[in-house]
Image 1: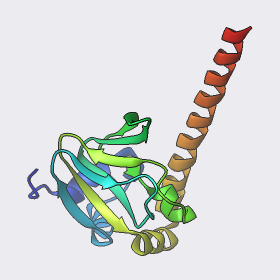
Image 2 (image 1 turned 90 degrees about the horizontal axis):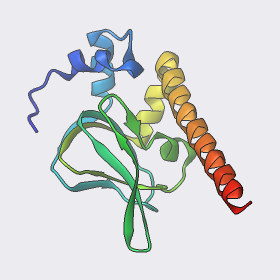
Image 3 (image 1 turned 90 degrees about the vertical axis):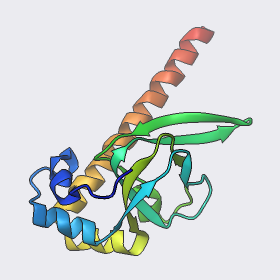
Length: 155
C-alpha cells in the first residue's frame, strides 16, 4: 500500500477523532509510526505480550482465535478503529491474533508512547476508553444472548 497518503487529513475524518484539526492529527501521528502491512501479515499473536496499539488507516484487519486447529474470526477492524488497546492498558497478554488479510496501513503506537499520549490528552483518552468499553459491553450482551438461546434450545 502506498505511504504517500496525507494521514493528518485522513485522521480527523474518523469518528474517534471527530473535531481534531490536522495539527491534532499530526500530534497523534508523531506519537506513533505508520506501517504499510503486506497481505497475510500477522500483527499480533494470541498469548503474546502486548507491546503496541494499532489504528487502522487503510484496509481491514481480522481479529481471530485459533481453536481445534481452526481460525475463528471474531471481528474485522475497519479504518478509524483501534485494536490492541485493552491488552496494553491492562498489561495482559493478547487475547486474540490480528492479521491483515489483504494488506493495510496502520499507525502503530508502542505501549509507553500510547499511555503517555492518553495521559497527556484527556479528550482523546476519554474517546478511546469509551469506545473500548462500548465494545466490551456489546460482546458481553452477545454472549448473554447466546447463552439464553442455548438454554431455550435445551428446554
